[in-house]
Image (cartoon, rainbow, N blue to C red; front, side):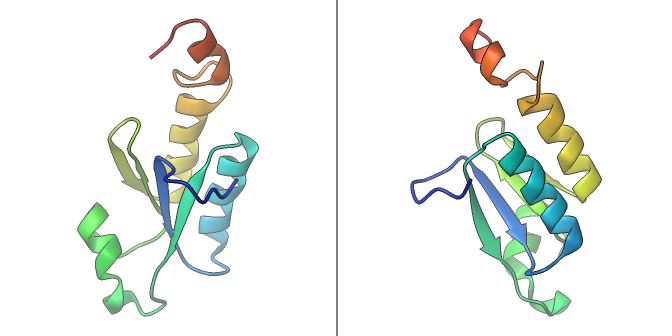
Length: 100
């Protein structure tokens, strides 16, 4: 879900990138608000991504709720599942039960 307010998650991505789309699908599955930052197609011009993650590859997420910055779509999907998925520490049922 793309939100116009200031969402806690920022996704650095490329247009039509299948790895980025995998992350988008997981964010939308969990109904998480996020901000998309589309990066330069030319690898050497991706300075914004490099400042965040130390590399110029995408996708990269920055989650201000947890202080996590990570790259690699498989790692990001696992992080989202463990954090926001069913039983995750920030999942809706965990928040309702008084989780952090």
